[in-house]
Length: 396
Image (cartoon, rainbow, N blue to C red):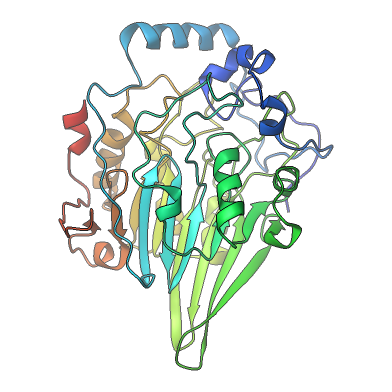
């Protein structure tokens, strides 16, 4: 269970994990709707299991210089439009597949269930509709066009993972439960999500989904809230809600199912080995690779750390699908640097990394078997890559 005590102000000035919030400027005059977008307030303070790194100190001067330098040199933004593909949505959910919509928004298909992770369809990840980090590419599909969903999982309450307009639309148009870390339910209640659709879980707690398999049996999917190393907050209050990764464990009526690990947003910690020991090894991992910097090493994993986590928790042939990159400009590194570093690290480690375009669907079973793993769109065009590929190079 997570510890609760007063904690250091981990990247204390950031908003939604984004650098533009570091100055706190648009918190003061973010415009109409600010109060609602910030959600509920709570008194509990959550902390990470690991202590902060000795050099983990908020340095407003360094961050401001980084923001100015990035703007001057055009870092963090692609030079050409990011290519999108129209997502393929089979009538029945697959045994193991994922569709990446950009950043950390992913539709996970596992043993006949569909789980939507960290859905963000808004244009900006900030409390304001006009100020703050904006999308670098459109969403590849309308939220209303998604196939039936069995559950939504949220990793934490930062703006680039918990999006008010998206939650509003899902609440209105879908009768789907929201599985969230403890405390995040307060935001959902404040936004009008019915109580019976909110499932709040602490680390190592789980909720089980069930469905008729059509042959007289019952398929199950255990949704487990697991540890992450991060922080939380939607305004000036920090760490009053929990952050988490998620472990999805399927159980078919006729036999063993599959497992998926969703990292959401996390820094590196050796404690992920415990997650792998208890709930893995996983058949597929979704791990964050972007928005890292030496200024905040405990907040976001870099690509090499993502590969290390994968090795701790995944089966030998399991594919790694990167998330938390390409969609929002939240750090000082170049736009394509995360995926370029990832592929080098994956190749050196001998693991399979699959990098879809936004909207691309990855067949996890095919990827693990060494076959072409990615089917891009309705025409059936297969253009996937395991540990090579350069659509991002063409974007620049």
